[in-house]
Amino acid sequence: MKIRAFILASPIAFFPLLASPQQPVEPPPSTVVKAARLLDVIKGTYIENAAVWIEGERVKEVGRAAEVEPHAPKNAKRIDLGRVTVLPGLIDCHTHIMARMESGDEAYVLDLATKSQAFRALEGAFNARITLNAGFTTIRDVESEGAGYADVALRDAIQQGLAEGPRMQVATRAIAAVGQYEPFGISPDLVNFPTGAQMISGVEDARRAVREQIGHGADLIKVYADWRNPTLTVEEMHVIVEEAHKQKLKVAAHANTAEGIKNAIAAGVDSIEHGSYASPEDLKMMKANGTFLVPTLGVVYALHDAKKYEAMNPEQRNRRETFRQNMQQILQLAGSLGVKIASGFDAGTADGQGKNANELVALTLVGTTPLQAIRAATADASELMGWQDRVGAIETGKYADLIAVEGDPLADITAIQKVKFVMKGGAVVKDDLSR
Ligand SMILES: [Zn+2]
View (spheres, rainbow, N blue to C red):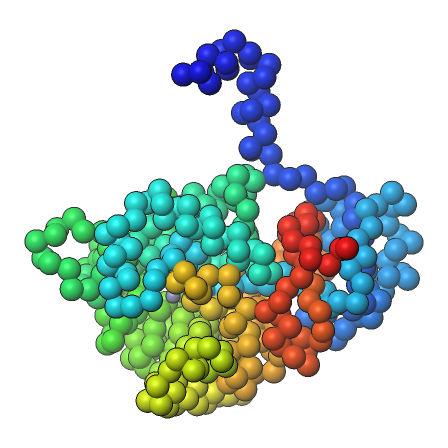
């Protein structure tokens, strides 16, 4: 009430209050960022003594400092990062930014039962900030895990400068077969208990769900082709793909079983998420159709994490090592066939959020080179998102999304887990380098 009286009495004071939160932090008109070296992810080579000239949100010129600097305006802001490696802002193609679940079997049900949509949105805002600070300037969120359309709200709030986070494509609720996705084991008497995805049965149900999600702001559609066994039918997924593609949106399919993967590819999806039991036949179909694989190797990463490794019993270690070897075979075959790979850490727990770079380390644990892992989280990821015109490389005309790390990430990929500097759209969001 007091605030209202103040506003009514002071119309002039009111306008800045209204306007200021809507204004994103304006990047300076011209900036030159210099560093000892910069990775050209397309060529796979370093530019030594590099500079990036940025105009507003976008890259104007990139190359050796001796060539770029004379072209930039004299009054441009200069940021000299010193002896670091600059890379494009990273991209995670499979994350759940709205989820901060605890570990354990009951976590999913508890999240749905105890957290309001408003609280989930605030959790998402926190996750978005730490993800951006970890160097991920773009994410593809593949399902809000029971947070409804809060991912649309978060994406829009970030765009408007109301919250800090990566550029986002969001899948909203995801689509699964009735009874074939979280939460499991709920009493049938709890008829309105919230669900982790939009549950459908039949072709017209599928069509309605995808239209509804697009209407509410989805940038892509996520489907569950299987859980433990195949779930949605090819026909159901086919109408989902048809409706999504009509609106120029892509479809990501959760699929682990050889049959589920085959069904999803036959329906025309754009990416297979996880793909843990992809058969050679599946991979050949993926190559033929240009379908991406997003292998989500978070489980494999645990083998590299000393604390997590210590906590595992011998049986768990064996199971994970078997899984690692299996994924190594799949990725080797995918690599030799030319199937495109994009990085996605599948964050969804409180301790997984902001650790998206672990996925790049995990990719190298199954035989990928550091450069291939970086490409899976930059140029190749931007292609899966259909955003290769704006992100994924430091090139003229693209967003000035840059990160810097100490050391040589092509020699030691773990450098990517310790990002020291983050710039998004020409604005510095993290700087642990300037003294
Ligand atoms: Zn996931």
